[in-house]
Amino acid sequence: MQNWRGAWLSAIRLTMLSVLIETMNDEEGLARTLASLIGGAVEGVVRDVIVCDNGSTDQTHRVAEHAGCHYVAGGIAAGIRQAKGDWLLLLEPGARLSEGWIDELVAHTARQTMPARFARARGSRTPFLARVFSGNRALAEGLVISKRQATALSKSARSAEAIARGLATRRLNAEIWVAPSK
Image 1 (cartoon, rainbow, N blue to C red):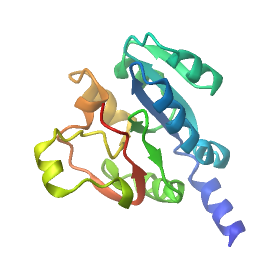
Image 2 (image 1 turned 135 degrees about the horizontal axis):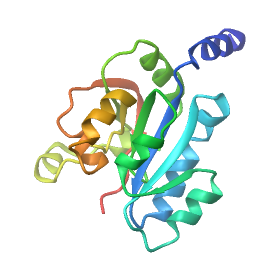
Image 3 (image 1 turned 180 degrees about the vertical axis):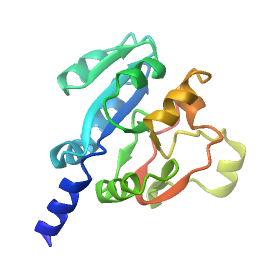
Image 4 (image 1 turned 90 degrees about the horizontal axis):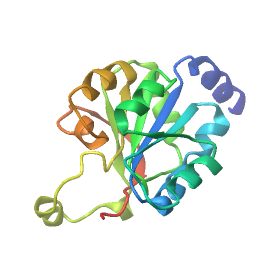
């Protein structure tokens, strides 16, 4: 079983993933998110991680540098331009991907389909009325999108949230622990 999985991942690695995390003064949340990506880096699926900063005054840049991330000032458009992967994973700082996300994401990108989002982890789901009356964050469940489509959207969108808003997406069969609201 393990040899089959390794061969399958090796064949799929042609479409590697760049992770983009847009942040401002959220060093603690960034560290939690980066920790959940370690498995993807070990498997060779995550090609690069780009922290797109919007003027942080805390130690966000140090967290990014210590983790080996690319640190870009100037927001999400600058990060998209620097991304090396054919597919992008946009995450909020503080979001954590649950076990099993790698296989699901690799399968999705291999099909070359539409953008996708993760399912909220059971403990991360908010009650229905709370969702209705609170502002729904379009990036709360993350966003997997082709670099080509993200580049086109970033010309008119000023943030990762704006890129994610209003997109028709597929739901991945993998979970995400949503970042706490600020």
